[in-house]
Image (cartoon, rainbow, N blue to C red; front, side, top):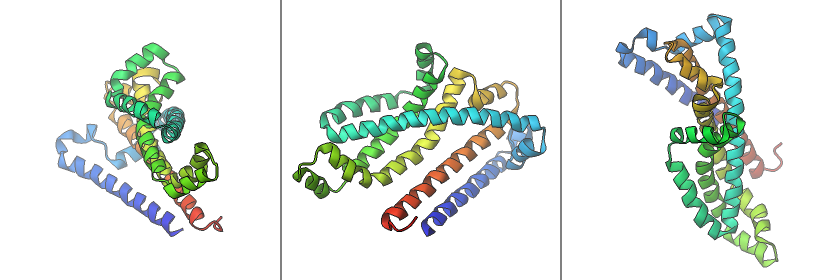
Length: 259
């Protein structure tokens, strides 16, 4: 379990560095002023020492944002995994799918959001597509690279004994691509949150994305900073959970007796 503890230690160190940069930024630009520039202590006070309604509002918004992010994550990662498997089985599919995915990735999502709203409305379909667009491309590329790195000799052995390409994919390529799959998941977690926030900003009018947008014209900077901090904390927690699970799985495959 040393690898898990080492990973958790690196995440803790990164969190400390983020807080240090936060303090350093406010110290380097004092013209921002305390009314706009909220420190971590100000955020803590707003959430835990202030009015209970503040914390309740943030938690309610976070619940909706996590729901939206989870939907986009599942749809995007499922499409990426399915597309990567098809790309391994068919070079023609890969040659046609990669340019399309690259084109979609190059279009700013903010410009696509109004089109998605006009086409699919402001419901969960729009949220799912927005999140999936953010998640799909980096996950697809990462998983394809992992599948392509599967031991060719093992793949050929399956084929030599009459196994199909799908069987070679299932028995050799997918297990070999587990590190890439977990890397794709780690990348997709913050991407799904970004997609959810964009969908809420420009589409649904719910969640932390909408509340942050509404806080700006009200000059409610404590709520804005608290919302940003909570989203960042949720992203760190989810990233840490994925990384810990990845290391436990890697430890299990290295030593199957580990439970």
